[in-house]
Length: 201
Image (cartoon, rainbow, N blue to C red):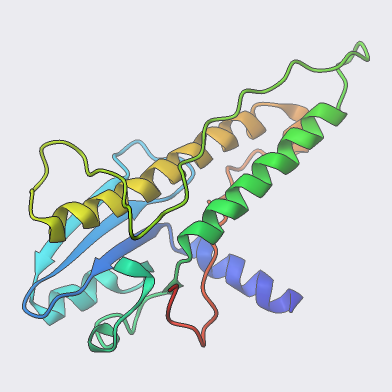
């Protein structure tokens, strides 16, 4: 179990882009989301709406996969056969919340050099859990086609979570008592679905 957990973490650390994938025969939509802990570019870093199978397979390869609706349908499995793994968005959100709680507890238990309690940290607000039946609104000005707009909304949700994590890591690495000597920004604590479960439904 421990070995499997370590292996999963290593796999996730090697993949810093999530592909939000919405399949439709004749034309699928994919949005790439950069989830690295620090990036000078926009988090939404690539978009494709195409029915070309070769293109779809190439832009999904070596990426973490979030199938729209939480389920990778049978017709799409061949297109996603080179992905790193399927992401569980709300378990990833829970992992992030837990990590913030751990850091906050460590901060509250620590004292200043003068032995006084430290001022509280105002942590960034996390997004609400992703509800496939009530998706967050898409950004203004995007393609109004629900097939596209809803896919962008999901990608934006993950981009928001990644941005929160980036701020958490800035807070951690800028405080000696939280960094504990580790000044390297850590990756978003992504949760993957079990390899024998291809659905989040």
